[in-house]
Length: 351
Length: 146
Image (cartoon, rainbow over all chains, first blue to last red; front, side, top):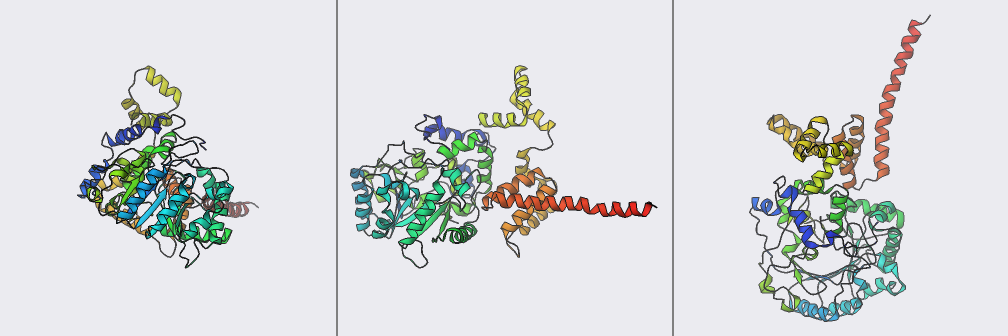
């Protein structure tokens, strides 16, 4: 289990350009596998174009209490990139004036940003339809100052989306670190206790499943059934929906794929599972990702690969919905991760 | 990517042989040919399974259609079928099938314990099949002995 980010280790894969090189060389350069651009061209889906903005996803910082092996953000306690209150204010202006119906806060562990609570309080006042916080669960148990998070989320009617790789201790701890499973279970029980995830409750609690290794997620519906049965029987835990998310071959997951000699097989699996119907609904079409320093990206993955939006408006201070709508989405081979099988987005399957 | 194919080759050959080949200036392409000629099973061949239709389109396609249908949800769940396939893969000792259904099991969230128990079911039937023939041996011996 890694304890430091690639960034802190000065690993060559901490460099976004090096990751993009890897994704464009080898099997994609010698024609063994088609590039994503060529693949979507087969069904006349190139260039991918952004439609009306519906979801604003804001990454409030890369700092996290965990160092998960598969993390595409390369997050960890040693990451110091944190969104300032000033940038948050600019985001609030955009939230007020844009047509987006969903606000999605992510990180790192977003709760570790010192202005997180202030931001949630202010953003909740805007009255956005769906206000998501992506919580890793263990943060709720990490320190006394976070113990009241379930109540805080409830007060602001936040929709909690949490990672839970498996209903067994072994698989969870292997991916996310020792003790993560027990803390996650405790946190889920506490969320249930204030009403989150209960049947017919308006307090939404959804779980995210992503495979703990070099394989694709199974059918979202049957995984949800398995998760619900096991969590209820073993721990009396309830939740609403399960989002099955495919791991994209970037950052620490790419590092893992290469080190374990699974890279080629994984890329083959992604390309073989390519589904043109998923392309029509990939999240970059209606989402905008904002980084901790206020720059705009087509998705959180492009943010990590430092691939800025293809638009004159590149920073939250220059936000212009009309300019951004219809922009060409920036793509590379990692995009196969969102179009495999039933597709994958931050809200689970798309096709 | 060079690094990757390099690693794959190393995994196919013992390192010592690899070093000798390098010292003798045998390039990586020839090395790959040697690997192809010297091993019956190459994990990368599994990806080429679909190509069997190229030499007999009708039969190949009918087979894949049947195969796909068999593994759909039915009276048995796709999950149960995956575990049966894993057990049978071991009994028929098919390395490709073992790779495929180990991965399929992981994708379906099947646990290691479930997978291992399934393989034991296959092993128990296989050893039972051997041992039940002991009755034939006993019959024969009893018939022949005075």
